[in-house]
Each structure stands twice: as structure tokens, then as C-alpha cells.
Length: 353
Image 1: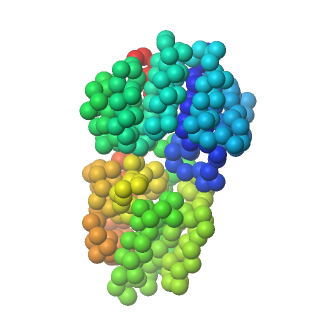
Image 2: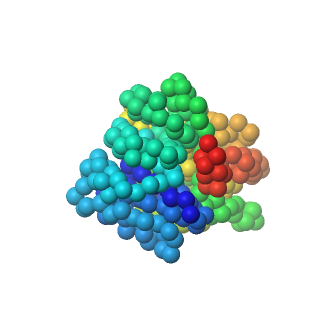
Image 3: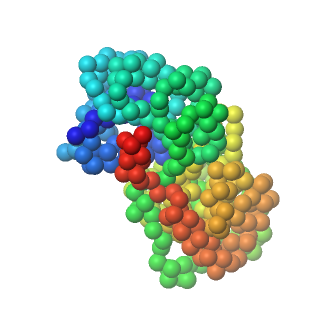
């Protein structure tokens, strides 16, 4: 049995109350690796350790519980001490962050024969890339822009591939149900308190719909820690839903809007919500970001540049049920072909390098 040490910077700090895309991906990855027969060791803050343990009952996952009062960097250094005498076949790091630099460096020094791999969900800083230059490390990037940072750093073992886990939860609704609907339901999904997710854009565009169209539409905003109240009776807000419930909710929708925008602090690096919508057979209306527009290059939805453009796209899809169905089918095929995560394929490639 091969041994894997999985170090994820989020797990080194206190658990967040909302399990979002990267956290869900990492939890599924651990479970997949253990189910495939690997012995997986995970350093985790005590709060995260409980979550990992619950999701991996009866599987070979060894959780190194870190103290309640530890921070990410302190927890990482403490984890180093706890695994110092152990050897691993693979050192696997989840995501990027300068606080990981000393942890990666010292773990590599202690495990000179180990393979090393990094999954980069976000753009790294220059210092992070520079620190890894002389290390034989395989990097998997969630998109081409992230990959470019490592390519400029002359990393040779590069993969650009990402996708969602548990795709079986997201399948289209029975097409006969839409015939009986008298409303067109638009939705926005994500951690919607974050302004860069673009809820304000979606609300403004929805309010601009011509009266005759708007009275036949609703806008569903799914994913608030504390759902706000809108005076508009046709704008409905939802608390954050567990991953396992999202498929059923999306099957009640007709169109998904992805109005994310790049900001200095955060930007969209993949959008698992978009792929979940595509798999569920929903046409997308997405903002004109490369990471979103590339998902619609084979059809599957419409791209917009501003609020007026979003309103026009909403009008077009609200008025044409056949176009909604056609685009939904195109998007689902694209998602099935490109955006399903395969842990077996990933580990096979890493172990061969």
C-alpha cells in the first residue's frame, strides 16, 4: 500500500462553516484516494479533522489533529514535527500560498525519494513559484491562466485539468415538467455574500426586464450565509445548501446566470456551480471571462459584457423554450466531455512521473 501525505492550507486552520467548491473537492479527493487503496495522512486543525473523519469512516485515512488554537502556518510547522520520522511515496499539496513554502521545502528534505505534486486552484504569487523552481514537482492547474505562472517558471511536469466530483448528483430534470411551468426560473449559485460573484449585476439586469417578460420570470439567488430580503416578490433568496441538495434544487430551474467578475482580491478560477448547472441541463448566461466563455465554446449558453447585455440574454432565453433546451443539452455534453474529475487518472499520471 502506497502512502500519501496530503497537506492542504485550508485544513491547517479552523473549519469554515460553508463547505464550498475547493473544500468539497479536497474532501472527495481524500475519500477517492483512500477508497483506491492508498494510505492517506492528513494534517488538519481539530475542527477540520472531525469533518475528514466523518467522511472517511472505515477507510485508511490517518488524521493528524492539530490544536484548536493553531493558525495555518503554526499548524503546518507542527504537522512537520509530527510526520518527521515517517516516509511517504507521494507528497501532495492542495492549492497555493506562501505559508506553504517552508512546509513544502522541509517535507521534501525529509522525503527525498517521494514524488511531489501540487494542485493549484488559484494564481500563485511570484515568490511561491520561485521557491519551487528547483524542485521536481508535478503541477496540476485548474485553468490556463494559473498554469501560465508555472510555465513561465519553466516547470516541465504541467497538467491543466480540473472538474467536479460526484457528477452523478447533477442530471437533467424530466423534460415533461417544464411544459407545465408558467414561470421561467433564473438562478445564481455560489457564496453570494462575496461581491465579485456579481449578484448586484444579476439583480439589476432582472429588474430591467420588460414588464411583459418580467412578470413571467423569477430570479433565485442561492447561497447566502445570511439571506438578505428583497422587496421584489419575484427575487427569492436561499441559505447555503449542502452539495448533496444542489442537484434537486437546480432541476427546478430553467437558466443559470454566472455573473462573476474579476476583482483585485478574488476572481473566478473555474466555477463548479457553472459545471453543475451544465450537467443539470441548464443553459448558462455567463460574464465574458475566459474561464467561463471557454465552457460555452461548443454552445450551451450566452455571454454578456454588461448589465444591458445580461438583460438582453435573459429576454432571449425567457422567450424561447426550444433554445433553452438546445443550449442545455449542448452544455451538458461539454461538461461530460471536459469537466468531470477523475482521481484514478490523476494518480496514475503522478505515479508514472
